[in-house]
Image 1 (tube, rainbow, N blue to C red):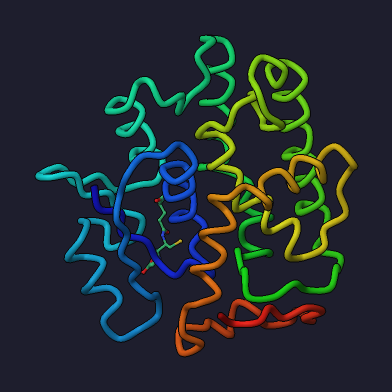
Image 2 (tube, rainbow, N blue to C red):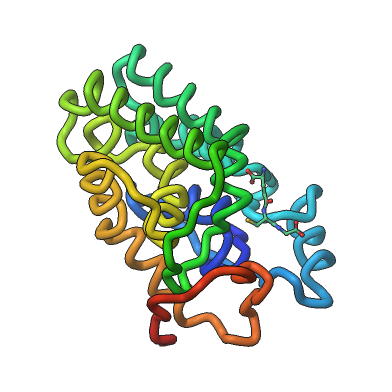
Length: 229
Ligand SMILES: N[C@@H](CCC(=O)N[C@@H](CS)C(=O)NCC(=O)O)C(=O)O
């Protein structure tokens, strides 16, 4: 299988299926198309009809949209535990993942995923605070109700698609020094040290600086800039 992703430094939607496949040992090769280059749109359109990444190509099947890719993988690899096995946990995980896909705009718009640096905390307004509170409540509820039913510190015990869906949110909270509760921080740390995330981040820091997108950082004060590999 071939997974087409955008810049690993910035592409939150690409991170989701990539991390899931890597974490669950689903073999694939990847290809990165840098955003904001003169040929970006044409290259993305050559891979998938929406002209965006991620796109999964499996023989003559092309799947675009991160959640559709995850569902395709769940059908193709029913034994990989992509969704929790327990139907109630699975319904919760799918609801949480869809809520992520469709929502949390204040958090997504004000804090774009950016693995290049970490920025000083600043007040981003009440809607942002509300969005973060909802994420924390959702993670707490998932872990309290279903987290103990599998090995691991993840939302539903073992690492599932829901953790992959929220991985970019974890990086945003970390990158922008957003204040969070201790249990939220513990979950964030579990994602940030996961070997699949570390592999993604390593690739991200090896991307050429010519691909950097300075407008993502307007108005932010960098407090830590990561060394490029
Ligand atoms: N809803 C889509 C969002 C895909 C998306 O917006 N991808 C961004 C990268 S994170 C992209 O390809 N941007 C390039 C463009 O819009 O030209 C999904 O879930 O896959």
